[in-house]
Length: 612
Image 1 (tube, rainbow, N blue to C red):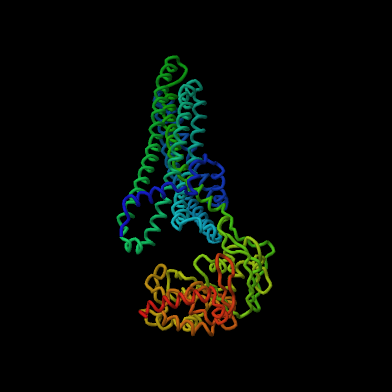
Image 2 (cartoon, helix red, strand yellow):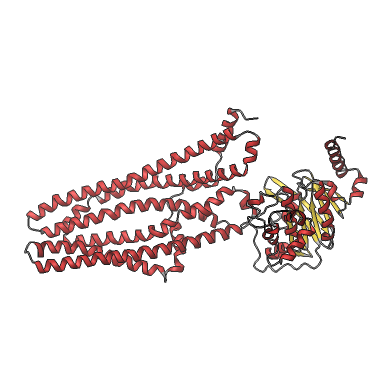
C-alpha cells in the first residue's frame, strides 16, 4: 500500500516548490514603521509603568557615568597627594552610588517586566479577536497550524523585546551618548583617537545585520511550516496509519526538520559573529587609548587620573555597543514575527457590515434567492443565476452531485460569503444590510463534520444559547433522542468530551450538534449532510424528533441520503451551480429525470449492500 520512493520524492518536491504567502516577507527591507506600530501597544501604559521604568533607567545610567569620573578624580587628588580624608569620602560616595545603581536597576527590571507582560497580553488579545472576526476566505487560504503559530509563537517572540529589549536599547543609547560626552569633556584629542575605529565598525556591522535579518525571517517561515505539518500529521494520524505511510511521513518531516536546523545554524552563526566583532573593535580602541594616552601624558597634556577614567569609560563604552548588537539580533527576530503578526492584523474581513446595518427581524422566515451568482475564485463559478423562493415554514432539500453548489447555497444564506451578484432576502430584508450577529442568531446550522469543544456535554449543547437552563438543554437533547446515550455515559451531561469530542462516536457527536442547534430556537434551520454519518436506527429517531421541531420553521436540508428528504416540501436538484429540477418527491419521480435517476442509483447501491 505504500507509495514508491520516486512518488514520495516527487510529492516532496512539489511541496518544496510551493510558494507560501509568507515567503514574500523574507525579501522585505527592515521596516521601522513596524516598530512604531509595536510601540502603540505601549501607549496605554505611558503614565503608569513606563515613567517609573524610564526614571529608574536614567538614574542608574547617571550613577554609572559618575563612577569613572570619581575614580579618575580620586587618582589625581586623593591617591597621588595621599589625601586620606578625601579618599575615604570618595570611596563611601562610590559605594553609595553602586548601591543606588543596584536599587534603580531592580526597579527598572521589575517595571519593564510588568510593562512587557501587559503589552504582550494586549497584543495577543487583539490578534485573537481580529482573527475570530475574519471571513471564511481568510481561513480558506491558510492552514490551521500557520494560524496557531502566529497566535502563539510569534507573539511569544515579542515578549523578550518588550520586557527587556526596547528599554535596554534606550538605556544603552543614553549610556553611549553620556560616555562620549564625558570623554570629550575629559580630552578631545584622546576621544577622537579612540573613536576612529567606529566608522569601520558601523559599515561592516550594517552588512552583517542585513544577512542576519533575512536569516531569522527564514527561520520563522520554516518553523511556521513545521507547525503546520505537526497539526496536519496529528489530525491525519488515522489516515497515515491506514495507508501505511508512517515511514514516508517521517521521511518528509526529517527533511523539514533538517532545513529548520540548517536555517537556525546559519542564523545563529551569523548572529554569533557580531559580538566578537564588536569586542575586537573595542580592543583596537583600547590599544589606541593607551598608545596615544601615553604620548599625551608624556607631553603633559593629561593626567594619570584622566587615563584611568578614560579606560573605565572605554570599558563601559564597548559593552553597550556589544549589547546593542545582541539586542539588534533580538530585534530582527521580533521584526520577522511582527511582520507576520501585522500581516494578519491588516487582513480585512471580506464580509463587512454596512454602517447603517440594522438587526434582522424575522417574523415569518421567508427566504428568497434573487439571481444569485457566486464564485470562490474567478475561474471557479459555484452558483449561476440562482433563484429560489422558500415560504415560511417550508422544508427545502438541496440535492445533486458533489460540487453542484449545495453547500454554497448554505454558506451564502449564513453570509459566510457574499454573492458576486444578486440578492438574498429573509422576510424581504437583504441580508447584506443587516447585522451579521442578528442574521446568524436566527439561523442554526448543523454540519456534516460536527465540531465539539473541550468541556462537558452540557456545555457543548448550551453553546447554542448560553443563557439556557439545564432543563432546556436536557429537553433539546431529548428532542433529538440524544438523552438516551448521554445518560449511559459515566457522568451523564457532565461527561467531558475531550478535544473535538473524540471520546464519542461520529453519530453521537452529530446528535449533540443537533441538540445544540435546536436549543438556539432558530427561525431557519440548516442541516448540511447532517445525517450522513448516522446509522439507520439513529436516523429514524432523529426524523421523529425533527418532525415536530421543523414544524413552523423554515428548513434547508442538504443530504446524500435521499430517503431522508422524501417528505420535504421542495426538492431542489442542482448541477454545476444551476437548478435543473424542482418539486416534491412524487412530482420529481413522475418526471423520471435527474432526481429520479439519483434515487434509483442510490436504491440499487442500498440493495447491493444488503446482499440483494
